[in-house]
Length: 105
Image 1 (cartoon, rainbow, N blue to C red):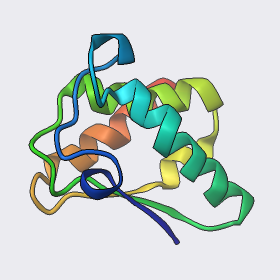
Image 2 (image 1 turned 180 degrees about the vertical axis):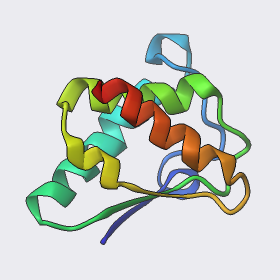
Image 3 (image 1 turned 90 degrees about the horizontal axis):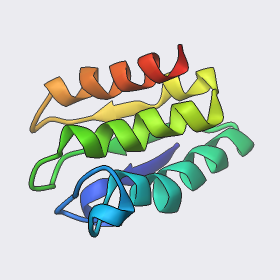
């Protein structure tokens, strides 16, 4: 199992959608962390878990660009199998899953 903890592997203060809007954007997270880890998980036939806890809040734009953007780019149904963990804000799990679903349509 490959695990990404956004707060410890990327930042505790996630930003907006695009890198042009400032530091720690959803776009930057997708390109630097999420996409390489997803591709590594595919190549090694492992699962991918992403932990959302520990940060200071997530803008919808950050999560949609990271996860929805990856789904739009890769068009891979296995993105639906990413395990999302959030004990601090459980509703975020369904939101992320929906961003992936919507982007794959």
